[in-house]
Image 1 (tube, one colour):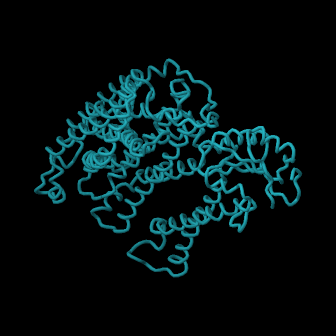
Image 2 (cartoon, chains in turn cyan, orange):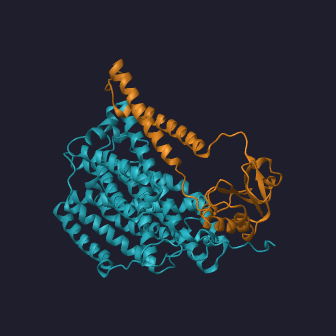
Image 3 (cartoon, rainbow over the protein chains, first blue to last red):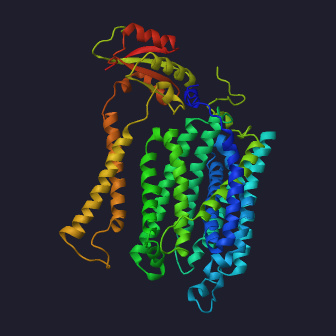
Length: 404
Length: 180
């Protein structure tokens, strides 16, 4: 077949050095220990640093869950080879639920509204329906339940298809996707309102949910690109992942770069234009001190630079451009989450605290450990998906349609 | 009809299936022809690679058009609102890239789209009123159930005998000359 040429991507095989394999454990242990020390040294700083790390890594699983739903809703074939590890990324929700516990415990330290009297605070009084402790904990439990249900549902049907090859598994996954995409939109919005936006409960923005959604999928795509490339070059996906996958992930990455910018700008623009103090205070706070610089960094680093780089097709296929860009995307998302969360604690400006680093390392360590365990205990791509041959560029003639 | 004259457009070969025409296209590509085309009733996946087609350069037109639109929009609003007829609206600055952005952005899209469309026309040499293939009686099959390869006489590799032999070897049927 003609498309064979593009599937045999000429990249050197890669062997992961031993010390890299030890990294997750080291980060989990080292980061966890340091974060624990931080929790006792400076509980408030720990709470905020931990929240930033949590929101960064929650993005990854939410974005992955969305990619899975899109795959099934559009009946895509290009994303079949990368689907299995995206399923694993989405299945990190139960772990994230456990990792949420420190936030649940420290909620009163992190969220100012928890300790305010609604009778004395008008904006809290009118938002009491959502912002009360019972809602906070019930919603958190429900959200993790919903996400775990869908993520596990996808992976269960997918793994079953590896054994049976039944078309009914694909249909099951489609049903999950069709119902899940609505639940996903609502649940993500609720999550980000409760866990991030409620830090400044007086604020209004109807775009906040979709804003977090855009950067979540952006981050998930950057991660997907790197994982696909590593798995290709180390062997497991060598013959199933090709230029088409990298190109399409790159295209979506570009799409969400633009989408993120569009949403971020729209949120800012509406608030800037209306100039109502109830809304502007959020941005006024974030234009003080070095937060101004972080804002500019997000404008240029989160949008302009990736946008210009990703315009070119050959850059989307070039690991020397894409790997640094994907790492950069993680840094930008960290800055973005800090920009949203940290001004509450540090109105004077952005300050990278050692507890920030410890919490990020801890999350990275724990989640990559779980991810790698999942990855190694199941087939690395859907073995008997009806579209697997098609996506590899092999034409299998349907039964009973032989041409003369 | 074997020798190419100045009145001859090219040579046409007919194929029965997408697979046949694709393999033939690979052979024509490998023989180094540049001015040739494949005509099929529906898109055939993988044909771009089989023909050795590169990515279209139309994207560069889009980029230049879009960049022009953005610059034009920003400078137009700056000129009107700050320079030529300064007027305060809603207590906002006389010029800010923020309020100028939506309009500039629309102009980016508009000029980007125009550049794409007209750049594509320029690259395709469109519009044209007539094409030699359209009056060839056999070519009607291209909109129904037949697959064709056409190699133009102006191709530097073209030679009446060898090109015909190549198409025959590739499995082409009814190899015929197309008059200008």
